[in-house]
Image 1 (cartoon, one colour):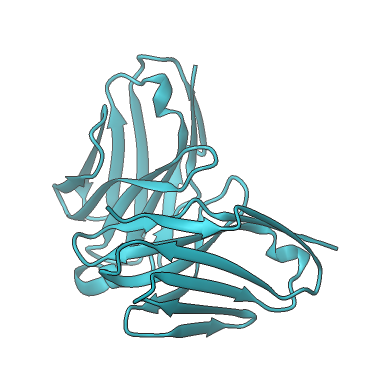
Image 2: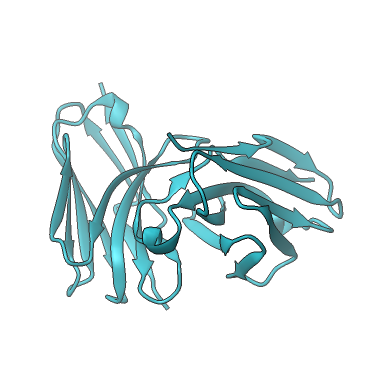
Length: 115
Length: 112
């Protein structure tokens, strides 16, 4: 069966510090991968998605970036965090190819607090 | 730009009641509509997915309907239980691009 792992679960960082959140998927090949952010009391906002290694689409201009160095690994990064980057970050996957029309499966999220 | 709205924002009901959560969307160019459940501080769990050509889907005590032309979906929960307490999110997958657009959710509390 497929599983998705996301870490860390919680993170407290000072303004201006770098960020690296990692997500890995097991039990499937060539998945579509997604990073979302959920602000308090609001819906999820798609940040990045990837259909393959090195292929990243950005939905929202910001100081965040994403990379996919391996087929089942998706990384969210920042060189300098802003207060507005605080939130709940979720990674998700769906089957590749036409699998985008299948349910997306989510990790447990990372609670990021910027001080 | 697609906008997804969920009503009500919060709902509190006694155990055993049947209830309906509403979702509306402004752009009917969708592949599917999905309902998710989110427990506090956790990720999302997929509940039901309705393809744009379908009218409804059922899973246990849950039934979701879709009226694509009017831009509406409902999630019906029968015989609610305290364990159903969570935030319920509606999302539509756009025909253009590989993108799910989410509503802000309905916070459900079922009282025992």
